[in-house]
Image (cartoon, rainbow, N blue to C red):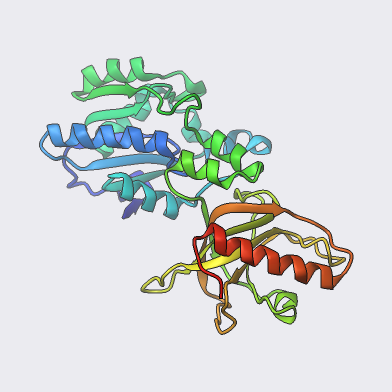
Length: 317
């Protein structure tokens, strides 16, 4: 998936395109619904390429950083998910206070017309753009008539609960990784480099691959989960079943760093330090607990692993 990180990186030779615009954080089912319609329009117009316009960083992180949401996916992951949904290229507009001050007319002229040569634009029905969110779908339709592109807003997708990035974050905050997966259309996952921890898991018979969490990135609430770990070497390896702990491990004093620790079921031979991995969450087993003794912790870890086997559809052994 090609990512253009500025308007200047868009090739001057780019022909007419179909464009969709949004933050696309997590690329949930609502986003996928809009992209499918953009793909349909592209076919109707002669199989034109579909370009997704997004913003990096998230606009709220620039305008109101104290209220910035935790991100569900990095730009690279976002682009990969958009590609899976049917997008051909991604333009990540570097968002700044200057860009926030662009009028709807300037955004259309600079991005949609001059850079991307839009033939059609497909967005969500609640789409807003331009300074102080002054532009909407009706604005796009009006400006499209001037600049020779069509525009349409797609009704928000979902059942009783409309799919949104905010909803996914609320699921993760509650530890509801299955609810998050339903909204995303795929299990929630995080990526990161495995770092060397205190190696307590190895001493207890359950060596873990530790990935630090970032305050700006979403992760499930503290607890133990069943899931999968996949190393992202070239080529990527197969996903391995794992028992995953998220939190600070309150049984041991002094630990404050929040981490995602994955024990690969029945494996103690893996060397993962410095390797980028993807940790995928399938189901929650329990919340984070503080145990009175290491022996009690080990017994519970054994039970957690057995529950993982069941939840992941594995046999004992």
